[in-house]
Structure formats: C-alpha cells, structure tokens
Image (cartoon, rainbow, N blue to C red):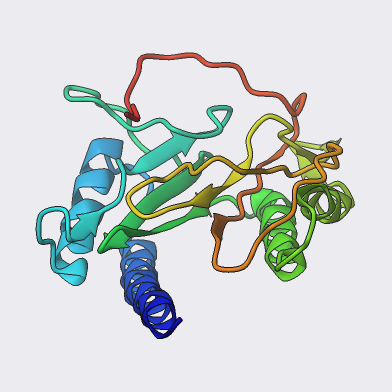
Length: 231
C-alpha cells in the first residue's frame, strides 16, 4: 500500500510539473501569435519553447504529441506538413492543441485563438462547456453524465456571424478520453453529448475533457492529408 501511495504521488507530481510547463507555453504563445504568421512557424516556435520549459530528455520528458493548429471548419488534428505555406488570417478561428509529458504523464490541453470579436461568443461557449465538464467529472461519475452536462451548457449559446445568428452545437463524434502513462488514448471516451454510456470514471484515472463547439452540423469527417498518426 505504501508503495502504491508513493507511486500515485509521484504520478501527480509529474502531472503538476507537466501542467505548469503547458500553462507557461500557452501564455507565451498567446503573447506573440498574430495574423500573417505562417502556421508552420507558429508550431515550430511553440514546440521550441515547449522543449525548453519541459527540459526535454528523450522519453523521460518532452513534447507529448504533434502540435495541432486546425483552422476554421477543420476541427482537430491538423498541423502543417513540410512545405505548407498556410498563413493565419485575421478572420480565422485557430485551435492550438499541444501536449507535454514528464515520465509518461501526459498533459493534453488546447486553446482557441480568434482575432475578430465576432467569434467571442463561440469561444465562450466552448470554454464554459469545458469547465462544466471538468467540474462534473469525478470518481464514480458516469461518462454519459459528463457529456450531458457539457451539451446543456454548450448548446445554450448562440453566435452572430456576419448578421446571421447560429445556434452553437457540440461536435458529437469528437470526444475527450482517458490517458495512461505514455498512452494518449487509454480506452475510455468522454462524450460532449448525452450518449447513454454508463461507464464510470474510476479512482486514479487521468482524463482529457475535450469539447468542440460548431455552427455547422455537429459531425466531423476525416479529410485532408495526414499530419498526425498514432501507434
């Protein structure tokens, strides 16, 4: 029992350090990201700071997964491949998704960048829904109940874009997930809508609570060239 408690405490300490590194990288990026920058330059500058702050050391410490910087209708898991000249625009909505890891304890977290205040209600909907999911999560909580709470908050918002009002919807087939050491998707999916999954969260599990708000249909399809892969 004492060994188990020591192991858990070490895991939490590693996670705290990885989370603090992530927070500092995020604040740094928010201070300089601007329209007109190439997406590949944004990712490389972010990852350089990430490596520095986490004190990269092979598999012991470092970047947890490729940096995502998906734009507009691309919901997630896009990053520029070599030679891509895509530039961040003033009316773009950009999702910056990056990770840190220490001794395999992964922090998977994202934030959204938009320079046009027209999109502020959309960003607020996602932030509010995510915080609601985090507050709802806990030992013995059913995954369906987390999704239901997220959906209720997210879909209470509207956003006006170029004179047209849109209801904000959850993207139903993008989920949060459990995380194991050195394993970003560990088997349990956390929905952002009520889906009837009565699986319970358990003690000592780690989760990424992920929510995606959209003015579209609320469903993603795989498209574009591959820029991420997972073994």
